Image (spheres, rainbow, N blue to C red):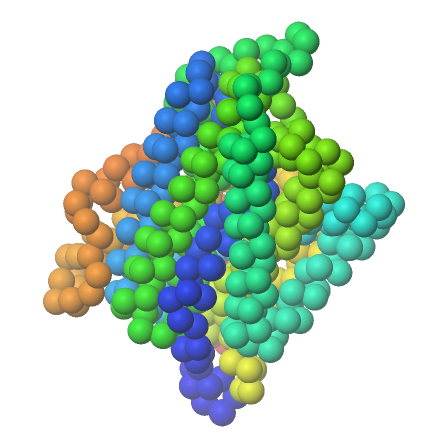
Length: 436
């Protein structure tokens, strides 16, 4: 839409802004908390680092695929747009449905709660303030993004720089002050398992690069800058993850990392005492705050496009004529996320949506075959090693889906049920908007 009330998005972001969105969408609290889980599922330090390196290769493959898709269709909406053009509106709607009902809103609620927990810890506030603070953070970020993409990007750039500094602090502390690996706690179980099982938490930690495709309509020179941002951002995150895990292993050792509940906090406290623990808590709070901002910023634009297509509330299609922001979609997404925070149900919802999320990622990647076949004359950035790269990515996603289904069959069935519930919702919205 580009009338007086919906003037369209404005291309105001450069390659640095887009790169910050990629980095901020990937690095959340996982690198500070989750490496212990990977160590528990591997037999040695070398296998732990190998898992993180393979995860980086997988994520880089996904980034290349999304780079070509973003260059071919540099408009707001990301995966929803690619699915709509390749498979039709119903499949695209089901993707948006699971993202709206669960993934974006649930992620915002979960990450805002994590932010509030660590913010209260740093400030010495009561745990009773966690939910009010989480709701306040969501509403604050939605309010900032109301003033346009530049306002949201400024918050994102600052938060991403600070979270990168937190990762650098962990790496420097580990390498400079670690010394010999610390012995594991008494009775700690050594790491075990297989590389395959270790890859699940690794792949989840690397996900999030796709947020930049949701705001492709606001990036300058998108055919050049989207691929640059995705590749540069992914390489940055891979380097951060490998260096951080090397630091954890250098200080804690493999068995110590496997037994740790909060490796970053233990490392920083060992290096700097109580001050180090407070610093890393502040780093996690900032990191999660930035991730919450990206989820709000990117998610709202997908729902705005769905509203414009007539498969969602028509009001969600509105763009603020002054700030070019999806104001109604921002408000709706933020309010639903606040409901999930207050109800405490976001954790279960995210468990239910895991399979749908990854199936959606595989289907989005598969749209590359459609564009290569029907849009061959479009001379834009092309993902290397096609079709092997896309097939390998889809195979890896299939592995994650099958592994998750075997490990959590009940959650998988509920997740598929949530997706199926989107079918009648789709036709109801279509009839309602057609009648109107």
